[in-house]
Structures are given as C-alpha cells and as structure tokens.
Image (tube, rainbow, N blue to C red; front, side, top):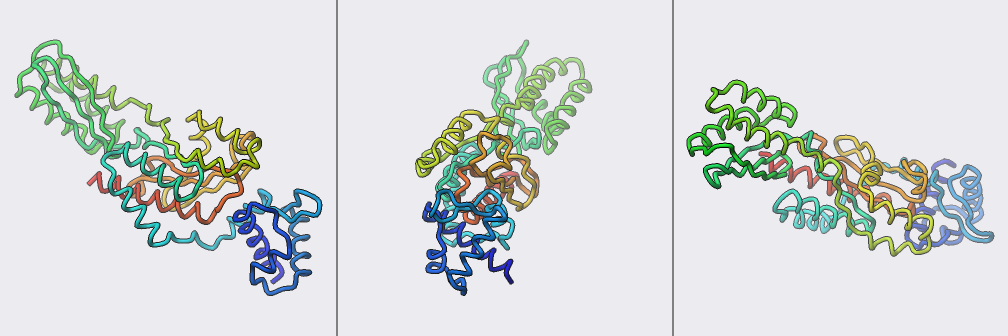
Length: 342
C-alpha cells in the first residue's frame, strides 16, 4: 500500500513538473490530485522518494523535481501506452496516406512526430541491406544508352544511366529485362546481387557482354549504402521551449543534430514489433547528452525491421504521450511500406 501510494505521488510529481516546468510542492499535489491522504503524509512520501533518489530539491525551500531514476520508474510502471485519440489517429492517417514516395513518407513522418510530441523528431531512412528487389526496368534512350530503374520493397527508387560499348536492339533489351527480373525480383539485396552475377556467366557470349555492363551498374546501385546513414530531422524549433536548460540540454542537442551518425546511435538498437525503447538521461550513449531522453521504436512491413524512428528532447518530457505518438507513427509507416510492397 505504501509503495503504491508513493508511486502515485511520484507519478503526480512527474506529471505536474512536465506540465508546469516548476518544482512541485506537497500542497500543490494535494490540491491537484486526489491522493486521498493528508499533506503531512504526502510530505513524508516525498521525503522517502528523495532519500531513495527518485526526486530532488533543486533549491532550498523549493518543491521537488524528478531525477533520471524517478523518470525511469515512472516509465517502467506505466501499465500500458495510452492510445492516441481519434482526432490524432485521423491526423496521422490523413497526412501519411497522402505520401507519394519513400522520401515523402519519411519527411511527412518526421514533421508529424515533431508536431504530435513537440520534440525533435528523427526518422532513419530504411536500411538498404534489408530491402528486397521489387522490379527492375530497362528503358532504351538511344541504341547505346539505357536508363536503369531499380525499385525496392521500401519504395526506394534508384535510377542509373548505362552507356553501352555497342548498340543494343529492342529485342536484346527486352530479353535482358526479363532475365534480370527473373534473377533478382523478390530477393534480398545480397541474394539479388549474387543471382545477377551468376546470370552473366550463364548467358551466351553474344549476350553476356551487354548483360555484364547492365549488371555492373545494377549491382553498384544495390550496394549504395548511403541511405543506411541517412536520417531526417524535424522540430528543432521545439527546443526553444527549454530555454531554462539551454546549456545543459539544448546546446549539446543542437550540436548533435548536425551529425547523422550521432543521431543514429541515439536511436539505438530498437527491436521489432510494437516495443518502444525509452532511454533517459545518463542511459544514453553520449555523456554530453545526459540531460536528454530518447523515445524510439523500429518500423517495417510484416515485422521486417527496416529502420528506426523516434523523438529526442530534454528529460522533462511527456513520456506517455511521446511513447504513444512514436508507436502510432511507426505503425502507420509500416503499414504504408507493407501496402507498397504488395
């Protein structure tokens, strides 16, 4: 009973501090929350929570604020992630359903996340190595030049020009188009590259030279790993709300936003499914960002982890709301990518 009551006091302190940005006193807790106990009991509970390291008093005669340990207990004891409201779900669906391609999905997602959470949003582009080949198109521009179009399961489209050492007929290009799709369509990138390499060895000599030129460019397009380190960032202006913690939280985070490798490490190793990872303060990988927290999850169609998305901001954040928004946006992105792969 005492433990549950103290947890309720801690929950109230976290909620009030996030909402008011002011240290929370016992009188305010009694007035704002139906704790069912006297102010003296609340003061005793606050003293116990302080002794255990869950809250601290930033100034003499001030109220209390949560510590990283307090935020962690608060997050760990959330029974469920609260569902998004119907208007929020409609807003997510209407914005993301209008996306026209992968870049548009990523940009809309990062903008939506930053608006829903009022934090900095980060969306990693789908990892190329985990993609499968949906289709390969060869378009004749001139007899000695082709346009190669590689379409992946994530919706990513790569275009390359292929300059041939000799002119190719329409029939030769049509035959090669069929062969490369038979070899690569539906395969993971690594398997598709191997299958295309084997294809050139199996073709007759008069066709193998043309095939090698096309396959060389195609495999190069598949091995372009730039997207694996690409992230989209949105909502940096939201940091203006945290001017009181500029030196400890905002300045280091603004500097980190310039480094995509840092942001990817902040997102961390998220897991498949609906699990949302929350890393608070010193739990993160960078000591200079110890005043920030990250809420992140993975996304991808049919339980296939393609990338991560999440939000980052000062530890004084709405964790339940942020967790709900991150999970909801990830689900919609996964659904869109899954539909595009049908």
